[in-house]
Amino acid sequence: MTQIRKSDIAKIKELDLLTYFKNYGPDELIRNGRNESYYLRHHDSLKLSNGMWYWWSRGIGGKTALDYLIKVEGFTFKDAAIYLKDLIQDRPPTKDYPSRKQNLPFRLPERNDCEDKVFDYLVNERCIDPNLVKELIKNGKLYEGKFTHDAIFVGFDEDHIPRFACRRSTVTNHKQDCLGSNKEYSFNISKSDNEVLHVFESVIDLLSFISIAMMYDIDYSSASYLSLSGISGNDQRIPIALMSYLDRHPYINHIVLHLDNDPAGRASSSSIIQALKNRYDIKDKPPQEGKDINDYLKILKKF
Image (cartoon, rainbow, N blue to C red; front, side):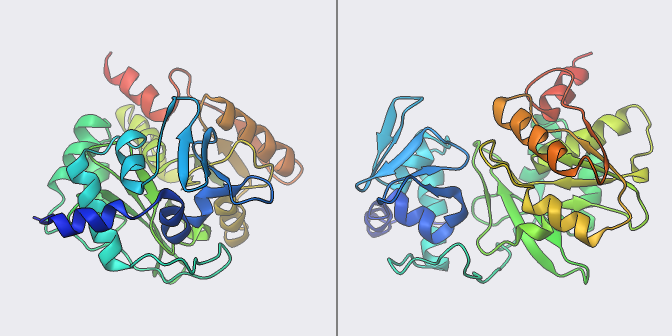
């Protein structure tokens, strides 16, 4: 188990939130005008300015990345400290920030010796079908990260080389693309000759949809499935994960959107349909109940 010393805590507390995102998640930052203030893509009421951050919709704020992980992402102090310690050791932050356009080196997070915590989280908390989880682990699309025990979901290119990974905490709501990930190869489950593509905001929703099909003995292998790894309701462009997937799979004729039942999900669905309706048979099918497909799966499991 990773040990945290007082010197580690001191170094962790020096990491302000803007430096954290500019080094480890530059795509999450959206510049607010010409000054050095920003808001976050997935928390658009959270503003960063003058070395501080404030989440207006919740009335909380702070300065450090440690504050953010605890107050916003729900980490315990210990989990946040371990996560940041490992991150800083792996790639020390610098004020010479990488730009969004710069190709950052991609490396999969270190793998744990077993997947027990990830399996328990996905099956017992998220209600994902256990056989589906086992299949993903066997195929290398899912594993448990060392130290933080996050679920790591992997996306591959045409030569089956990992190009993308996103982490999902098994103890908090924290989720993030791994450093250097190429969203063009976002997590997907595909077969080369399928003409139908189902699209989701997150991997959890994708797996939830397939789990529902398995509940009712529906053959899910007749379609392909893509996670966008997050959306922005303010962005009118086609998400890069979807655009790149369609470019690589020209046989896709039918697209079914299963984005969330919230303003961002509804806005993104409308934008995608408007952009692609003349090229594809495209349908909008948000979850029948709940905010997202995982909510809907949990509702079905209660009956």
